[in-house]
Image (cartoon, rainbow, N blue to C red; front, top):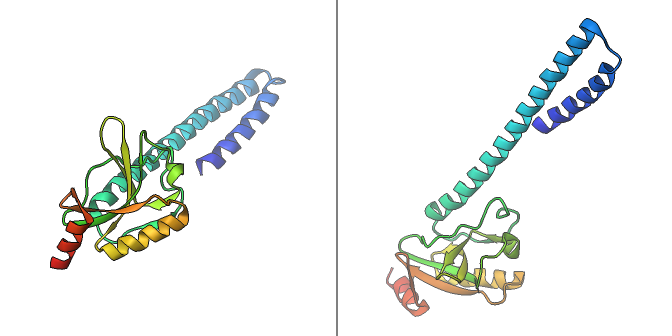
Length: 185
């Protein structure tokens, strides 16, 4: 919306700037005021566009964080493209929903990676393991079988080193402990 208006303003300013060269007197004053008003309106549009982009980025970042805290079971996709990008970062968090949760570890890296490296994987988060290493995990699953199915999808997508990890009340546990806890539920 604002982009279209900016194009119109710029076209009008171009025409008026050409016209002002040949004007004198009262007509010159009127056209000069119109030019000044158009420049003010153009600046206002730029501010609105900039503000809108910042709000959108902020909303998407908040949604990403909120999704990790609200959605806690059986969520995973390899086809959610362009959600994480240079403006919407992969969240760095150690939060895992309470109870038994399986996740898919996509990778363990010496530094943070660009979101493009994980194109399509959703939801995704990174965990800072220490001062150097980052663990990237995806999805939230209630059962080992669901997590295992997601692993197959991730491997088919090219993430061949991915594997299932388990958490209980936010603490990482072994798969055997998780399977035992799953049996007891």
